[in-house]
Length: 162
Image (cartoon, rainbow, N blue to C red; front, top):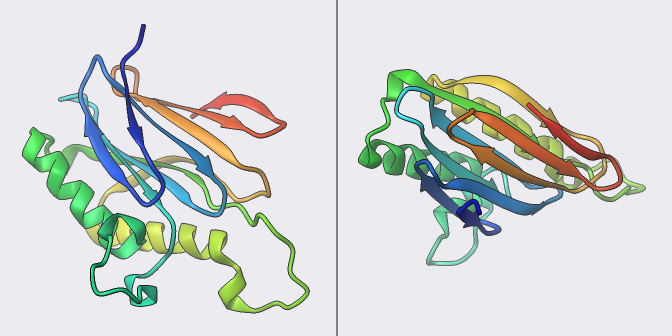
């Protein structure tokens, strides 16, 4: 039986084979997998919001925001032995789960999360090799560092791999 490292909401973690890494409950949140194909070291963040300036508490959860979570994830990957120059990323999530009568930018959390994650990955010079974002359905994702495949189970749409 496969050993799974679980990543909760507003959480992040890293894994090495034979462990796989998984997060569930991605609605407007974005699941970001960063991995090194050579060392097989991978990490995943379950990003809830685009920008840490939205945080109101004194003790900020860095894993919650796109602009802070990926820095922490990169640091943790490096500690485990991943080479920054070899890192690649895959994304899933960022759905627009609810329809609103207003077209307020604030209510577009899913698309804003995707944009913020992509911007941060560009800043970190990590290329995105595959993505399954948008739509209006929830997703569960699981990454296998041995095959570098991201399995995506989408509500009412079955399972796909990228």
